[in-house]
Image (cartoon, rainbow, N blue to C red; front, side, top):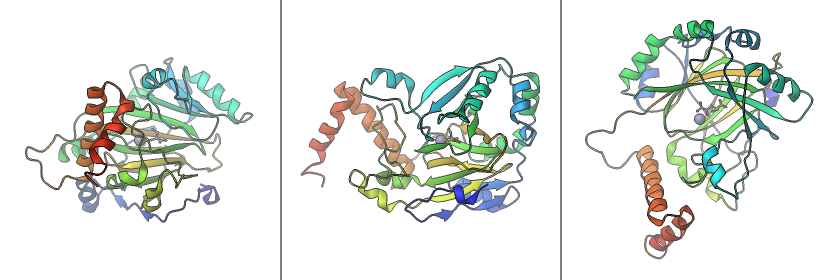
Length: 324
Ligand SMILES: CC[C@@H](CC(=O)C(=O)O)C(=O)O
Ligand SMILES: [Zn+2]
């Protein structure tokens, strides 16, 4: 990848450890819900051949969700909520197209400023060769991890094919994630769940729930003063690397320029439901549990007031002059 293309941000960062699948330290970190890049897993080795030609030949006739953006940012939003929220402006457009249509959209990017990002859950519409490749993922290893860490079921594998330069802005997910890089390079900037106060997520009822309001490339320090205190940890993942993104950990993913032809990156993630709540809650709560409590309070108040816009006012009445 072209190291000159790496965006400069106003904060220092640590490096995410890069350890072998054979190193016991790898599993100590996962057990502690800490990010780690795991090498030599061969988790998606059978997908190393997933270039655009092979995918065109074998992905089948199904439809794929492809997002287009006038910038290089692809901020996720819940499309159902977006429809109900009149004031909300979609940051990207979602299209449901065949793979050949996606390839056409990709070609058009070279002569427009538009960027595209295919983000599709692998499903049973794919061709038999893709099914074979999928079955040859290293399920033995990943299932052993699932069992060892008490994770819930695999909820989905998201296929990601994006243009070099695309950015998925900082957000968190409520699932454990083994993020497998197939081709191209991605810079992954992670922030621990205890940095919630620095990252100012949208309200839970907002279409961009779980997404930070802070634009890393242009932070508004007046609205988000605590952003100055962020302390990310980051790494660049390349073909064959697997990054463990623990549940509730914030992450921004940037596809780096590597002058690949065509200039795309390919990844597949493995989203797992989190482990069951412990029988006995230990105190103090973990940062993840604190985020979960805050989410539940926002949801409960939005329902109790029958209007998400009234939640802030009620919380201020509770806190101001009393819990300060
Ligand atoms: C969803 C897109 C993102 C990955 C990610 O956020 C995740 O796997 O949770 C990326 O690779 O651009
Ligand atoms: Zn994510």
